[in-house]
Amino acid sequence: QVQLVESGGGLVQPGGSLRLSCAASGSGFSSSAMGWYRQAPGKQRELVAGVAPGGSTNYEDSVKGRFTISRDNAKNTVYLQMNSLKPEDTAIYYCNARFGTKYSYWGQGTQVTVSS
Image 1: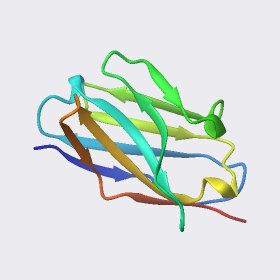
Image 2: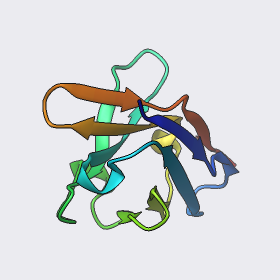
Image 3: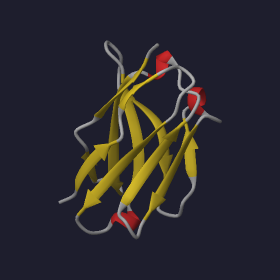
Image 4: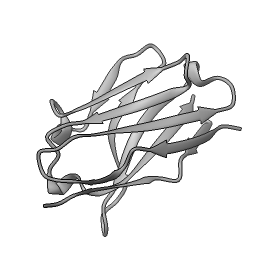
């Protein structure tokens, strides 16, 4: 069983930055694919950024060049550095850990609000 706890959300002005953290408990973190998803009101949850066990990353088009995902396997933690934030980035951000195709775990989510 894996538990994920997100932190770092909050209210920020347009153009500002936030860093989200997701701490994982349990074993096997280094072999998991980690991802950050977000869900805005009235919209479906979407993948924002992912990092594979080997470190390769992928990003949703609208965040490329602004967001950076990284992982620290020694701390069982994945991060999402968000720069140049826009109002349309406002959403609940969720951390996901995936082990192969069978097991997937979610955090409780953290609210990010971009507003002046």
